[in-house]
Length: 182
Image 1: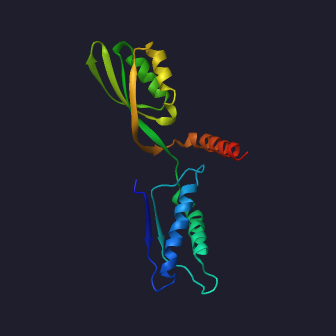
Image 2: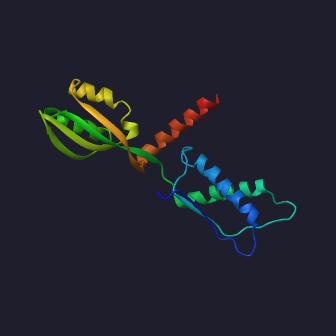
Image 3: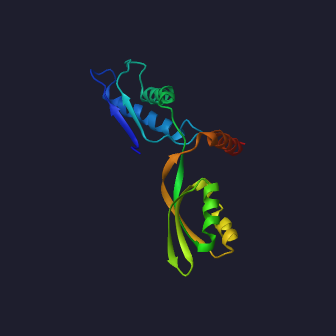
């Protein structure tokens, strides 16, 4: 991802220079709140190219609010998506249970990247899977391999959440926020 890029294209003093950082701050705060289930918005480029100024009524807070409102007005056109962390997983299992492990990974929206025998009847399976699907993996692996399998997992990258899962995630996030505010 490209992160957040703020571009100032104001010409002719439509907005005094000292208020431009307030516009950026308003955008940054809106990004942190996000628009999809309240998760932060990432990888966005925002360009301020025009505005107005009033000698009496203009203030830093007014330009900060304007930056936030501009984000909220413009973001639907960008068609934002929800991203989820994808983990790189190395799983060492008995060769006889490779099929069961691959089947379990497929059920967790995982993708096998490769396999390699490592001797003594053991196989390493390299895969990627969404972090949300791997929270109980130690228990699942122990159950499938009767304690003979082991794994290590680390963050790899972010990917778009499949569209059919988004409504459930949004609803769960809403419940979390309501519980936190109760």
